[in-house]
Amino acid sequence: MLTLLCYILDVIAFFVAVAAFDTEITAVADISLLFLACANIAIDAYYVVWVISAKVKFPDYVANQIVLALLGVFKKLNLVIAAKLEKLSDDKQSQISAAASAPAEPRS
Image 1 (spheres, helix red, strand yellow):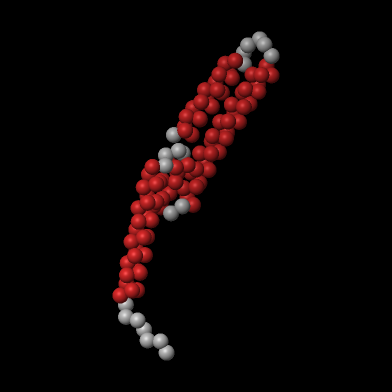
Image 2 (cartoon, one colour; image 1 turned 45 degrees about the vertical axis):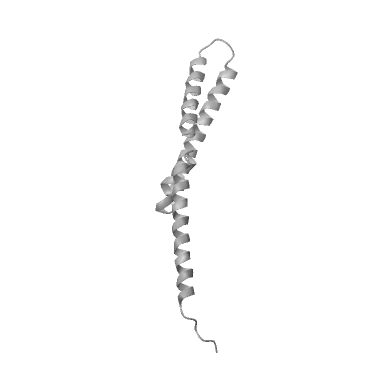
């Protein structure tokens, strides 16, 4: 869960910037660090909201796995997609064998 790690590190950076804000040296660097930490936390929050909204756009059988994949866990998504492709392949094979065993219609 790299996204969670990034969020935690951004929150730590924010509090480090807040703690460094009370020193007597110039505040420009401290304000810059504070602004960048706030921007990174906002970007993290936007990404999490985007991932949650992506869950609504996909079919139920794969929605949870896509959310996990967007958060960095791909194994379950690969298993679900492989199972779905296997099922589609089996259905296609049964359609082909049914069409091959059906009697041919006479052409006029």
